[in-house]
Amino acid sequence: MSFRNVKVPNIPGSGASAALVKVALIGGTVVYAALNSIYNVDGGHRAIVFNRIEGIKDKVYPEGTHLMIPWFERPIIYDVRARPNLVESTSGSRDLQMVKIGLRVLTRPLPDQLPTIYRSLGENYNERVLPSIIHETLKAVVAQYNASQLITQREAVSREIRKILTERARNFNIALDDVSITSLSFGKEFTNAIEAKQVAAQEAERAKFIVEKAEQDKKSAVIRAQGEAKSAQLIGQAIANNPAFLALRQIEAAREIAHTIANSSNRVFLQSNDLLLNLQELNFEGTTKLKK
Image 1 (cartoon, rainbow, N blue to C red):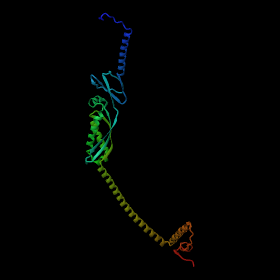
Image 2 (image 1 turned 45 degrees about the horizontal axis):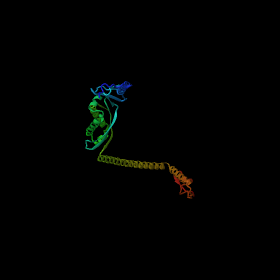
Image 3 (image 1 turned 90 degrees about the vertical axis):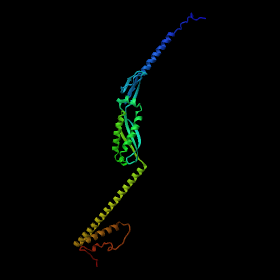
Image 4 (image 1 turned 180 degrees about the vertical axis):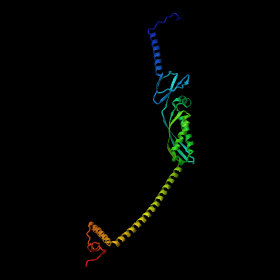
């Protein structure tokens, strides 16, 4: 049986379906191209573009919206803001003491060198470069100082570390904005030695204070004795020159005794002779005589 002469009837609407498929394909292609032909670079970021034919382009794209060829090009965005990196390292000082140093480093990539950074280090450049150069720099710098100098000359040590790190990081197109020592600790033996030294210094200061206090007490006793001797001499001269001075002192003593008895809550009966209250019998020429 031959089907050569059989005529296939035309199906109504088959041409319209084909046109709809073509329109859908073209529309999908346009939408895909529109969505994948632009990209945004946020604030504090820079972008470089990888082309499937040329590779990494040398141009660095600033903040904003940019065009690219869909599928053929792919943007690589870098954060160029300073980021903190905390690194701890254990090193040996010049006097063979183990020192543990914590370092805080603010780093950022050089925007103009982003293509070179991507070619040589990739996107995670911090993890590949910073730990190695920081550990090496810390060991080199700490070995130049004694353990005690690391404490007393901490600012100088920090400046030396920053100087060397800045030069080393510049070789990898990385900028260092700040380097600071966050922690500095020593071995147990050295810590105990420092505490013992401080205790000894405090004891020495205390002994020095005791010696100075004894000297001051001695001088005070001498001055007090000289004052009492001078006072006795003046009183003797006053009595010799004016016999009424002794009578004045007797009046003052009698007044103090009377004041004390008056303020007492107890009743006291004593003779006036015993309390120096026989003021009516005073002789202002220097003698006291009893009434007959």
